[in-house]
Image (cartoon, rainbow, N blue to C red; front, side, top):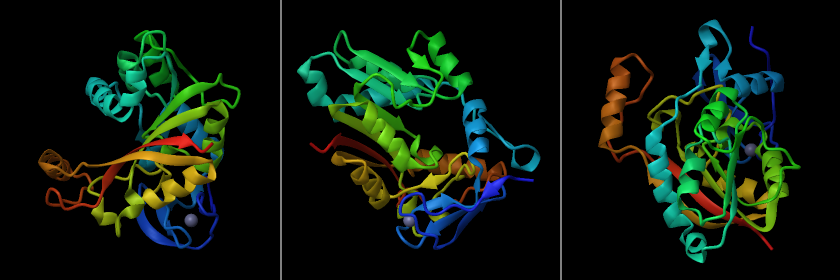
Length: 279
Ligand SMILES: [Zn+2]
């Protein structure tokens, strides 16, 4: 039996919601207060923690393995993304400190290391041992841990595809704030699922219960402003191109629950934003 508990909306605290999707026996609901989408009932905190550290969720019918391999193409992609979005930082030429939170196999740490000025301190924290040790094997400074409030202070943090894994993002951002220098900044990337009208508008699996929370731009803004951040730059990247279309047809043929949508018709976007602490 799954050990789960009813939880209020992790963004606005409302108890009022309606069903939105079901996957692997878990339910995602839409908050009536702020329109966030979140898993409710939710696995107990101890189970979430265990899955995050081992990369394995549940057993039998609910089994899900998320110990993904290193993706070399991610390094090139994020080199380009960070090169553009933080061009003023690189032009400044001064050494910086950067911490990637939920560093996975170290791809982001590697990307930043390639473009940061000489003398910069680039590292990461990753609670899943299988991934963190893979990053260390490549010579990267990635510790097997969650972000600790007493982590040494840094100038920048990146949080890439982490948001949906964090049950209580208000608490998480408070910890991020505590490790940032006074003029610190963050880079956050997540999908905008809560901006979609219905489940079928997202052409893929939701990844429940590995993913617990889905925001849109409004809810991300609510989380950031409560933690004292203001958005300095934002990019909205569509993923439903013709290659994605072809892949979703293949996955559908393999029996995966993909909704086939014509390319360039989905409102789904990857949101990439740069935010800074309000003085
Ligand atoms: Zn809410």
